[in-house]
Amino acid sequence: MPAKITSPANLLEMVNAYRKSRIILTAHELNIFTILDNSSMSSAALSEKAGTDPRATDRLMNALVAIGLLEKYNSLFTNTSFTSKFLVKTQSSFLGGLSHQVQLWKTWSTLTEAVKQGSSVTIKESIGERDEDWLKSFLAAMHSRSQQAKEVADLLDLSGIKQMLDVGGGSGAFSYAFLRINNDIVSTIFDLPSVVPITQNYIEKEGFSKTVKTLGGDYLKDEFGGKYDLVLVSAVVHINSQEENQLLVNKCSKALNSGGQLVIMDHIMSEDRTEPEIGAIFALNMLVGTEKGDTYTESEIRSWMTNAGLKNIHVKNTQQETYLMIGTK
Image 1 (cartoon, rainbow, N blue to C red):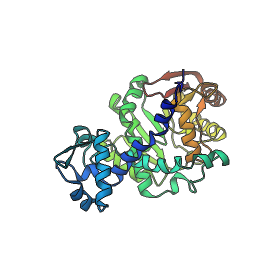
Image 2 (image 1 turned 45 degrees about the vertical axis):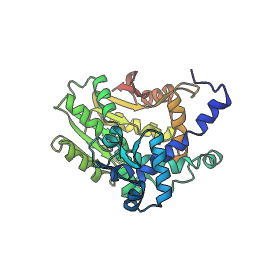
Image 3 (image 1 turned 120 degrees about the vertical axis):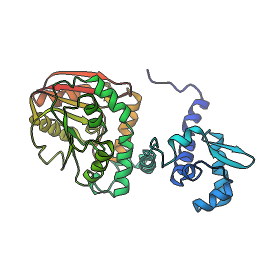
Image 4 (image 1 turned 90 degrees about the horizontal axis):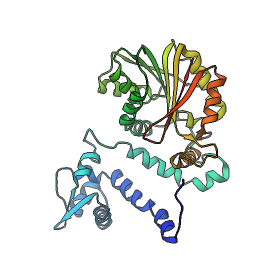
């Protein structure tokens, strides 16, 4: 059941939660943790390197100590073991998705106007038209789901899969997880032409240049090419309207071999759209960030699959509060 607010203190704690979020995102934008890597530094010295105001930087760093992301001894600041591992940009474990969270902060600030208007008031161009920095931060955020990709791969029967299509696959995190279980799979990652060069960098970095291909296009307009044993649509349907998703599922079904599977991974809402909590909140993320996006119920997704001629439709849940809807051609 949804958590209940039982006191003004509960409410104010929730209302004020944005403060810590903003502290962390500002520190990330200013490269505080990366500048401090493997060193102890006064706030004045860090301010000089960061090009920021000394007093304001000192107060920011003190707040980072207070919330547990920096340590302070004799007026010198250092990273904690956690920040050294996850918040320093040169580390392989760096949480690069924080740059995308900075972008989300800007769109979420327009929620009131978006509710009045009924769609995003900030997005003036499609994803494919956005600048390279935005695309890179977005794909980094998506790639951070690699652990979830492994879980999804373990939930599916990948035996006998030879060709798969990863629609809107971005960095390719899910394709790599699938291929690590079944190295006979050849995956095609279909994404926007502006995304494909970034995807190719991830493919090379992950060592899958021989078994993962890319195909650029618009999944609502362009052909997917070839026939596939499995089509994965992960974190895509929430970007689209009902009508667009029906078109997409029809195209995915057409691209499947007989007996092939369509796997849709996304938030799946209760029929009254109040659970799970993360999905109800994410629906608003789509409101402020897209023209037509939303989160959808099981019956809605099931209807798209049924209309596309898919059978044996069933649901599997993950530990990340997202679900898999699976249908067979």
